[in-house]
Amino acid sequence: MPTVEEIKTLREQRMGTHKELITLLERAESEKRELTADEQATEARLNKALDESREVVTGLEKRHAALAEAEQRQAEAEETFGKLLKGTDLRGLPGGPTGRDETGTADEMAQVRSWLTGGSGKRALEVRAGKAMGPEEFRVLSKLTAGAGANTVKTSFYEKLIAHLIEVSGIMQAGPTVLNTSTGEQMLIPKTTSHSTAALVAEAGTIGASDPVFAQAALDAYKYAVLLQVSHELANDTSVDLLSYLAMQAGRAVGNAFGSALAIGTGSSQPQGVVPVASVGVTGGAGVAGAFTSDNIIDLFYSVIAPYRNSQSCAFVMRDATVASVRKLKDTTGQYLWQPSIQLGVPDTLLGKRLITDPFIPAVALSARSVLFGDFSQFYVRLVESLRFERSDDFAFNTDLITYRCILRGDSELVDVTGAIKAFVGNAA
Image (cartoon, rainbow, N blue to C red):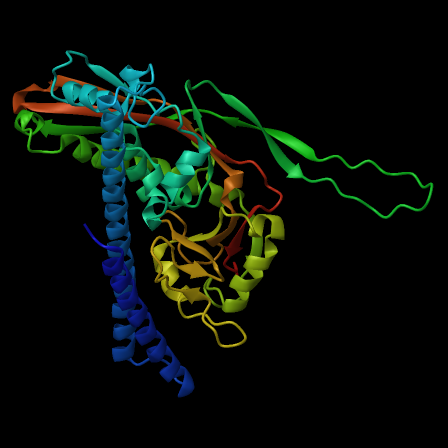
């Protein structure tokens, strides 16, 4: 099991790589020259090392959290059995009877395993979220990539799928409000288009009315699906963790498709992505092919009003390639805006706010919305509760493969378009 010290050591090594990059950039800056070809190659290598080390550290943090959770469960089980031996009523204790044995995690996993190998005799399987699943628990899951909060998340097949879905979607990591519904009928939710305003009123003067303006947003249940095939030998080999394999493959496949829509979906016959509807916070300067400056990023930060800016769900979101440019930016005092994290469970920051990468955010270009910043809790993601799995022995009968089909239904919408999330837009000129 990776220790906290080992993860800390890797983070410190990452900090060393960052310092090496800063030294390289500052040397060229002090000599008032551009980077040489060799220095540009070194810069690219160091940026790549920072990106790769972030992935390694994140993976170790997740593994550490998962193992810590397993230890916690073991301790709870031992406590429960201890109570049992003493003849104490177990109801209400962790691991004790709840009256819902058929939905317990252990029973669910056994049912899924039986279905995967054909033992249940059923063609379809609906994997449902537990009773506690909802916006708060999904937000805990959304922090899993940063290694935070994993001890509080129960592990089930459903949650493994969701965890992998979140891994490939930076929008899901940013902390949106997740609405988990049991059925897929259209859901209408209020959408704020403007807020009330107040004015100075003289003594005995008439107070003017100013009501907030609402619209309605419809959350549907668009379908995302993938086919997975495994051999009968793999499915029946008890030494292979088929559950984790299918959860990873299905979660990533569906997550990539759904995650793209969460970022750039048009809202027409597909989810409404956050990029097209985010308010314009800052437009870049002319003649720089859509690039941004440190002043642009600072202006974007303060273009979001304080209540949203101070939210725990407030973050910067951009693609990986854009982060390389952000790492070079300084404020007026010469301090770098981007700071790597050396603390367990804490992500890298930009101007003190979480910096999250999403592969579906547009690249820096003319007219491109390449950087998002704001309160992502105002972005609603609707997931229909059950993830539907179906199994067929006949689809690939001639190759002796079992075919699994995973189907997820969901939608998304920004419910506050008054400026909760804003975008940097490259100049079109």
